[in-house]
Image 1: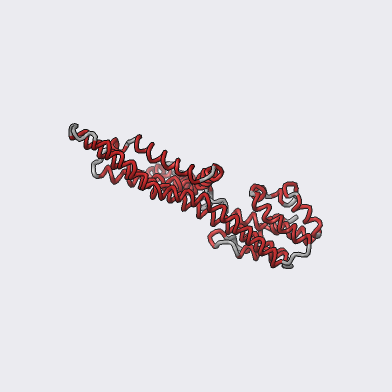
Image 2: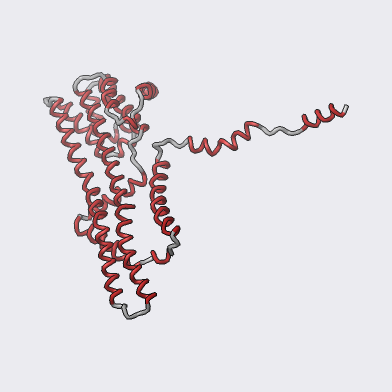
Length: 329
């Protein structure tokens, strides 16, 4: 009788809902797994994490040796180094290039837009454009390339329309093909020339920022020398004051080197990678357009373009097939 009561008591113990418990433990993991590796959120996160790691590692190691953070706070050194760096940037470059540098730095935080999803969208756009030209004829294609913003094909792809250079890159080439009398080889050479010019222009702000980064250690030495001059004028003072001024002078060298190799140098390198990714994107457009002009079927022209996508962002054949079939009317 007692055994039956114990069994019934055990049966009355509320058993937690396994589904709700599982959701509590897996919710954070599902949130992380839901973030695509190419998502802008993750890209911005990694850029900011890199900055935090640099600052944390430098200051952490300094504090481990019982350093005082107040000694590193030297506004005068920052004014000398930062002001001189800004001045050299303005001396060496026109204001338009300075604006491009600022835009490029903002682009680093946003990350490269040329992701797998972006390429899938681009290939789908090319398939729609080529299929329409094959079905309705080149006259209909001429209407699209003459006014891309009002095109029924291009209007479905706002990301492509937002890139004005890419729009001209594709439409101007197709316009020349429609006009006739131009060989595909010549059109290919035109697109290659356009890519070279654009890549050169995209590299100008990167080179300018790299030049400023390379100058920062020297500007740090300038700040340190000025600090030494001030220290020499205070040699008759107490040792504590002299030590403080020497420390302030050395902070100038420290800040110049840190700003060069810890921040501006890596930012310029990241801008270069984004520029290279942009060149890869134009190569994809070039391969698809030239293949279609040479007479390839729309699906084959799209496949030429897909094969030229970098492996890290290349969608599979099935992905493109599903995307094109899903968008087909």
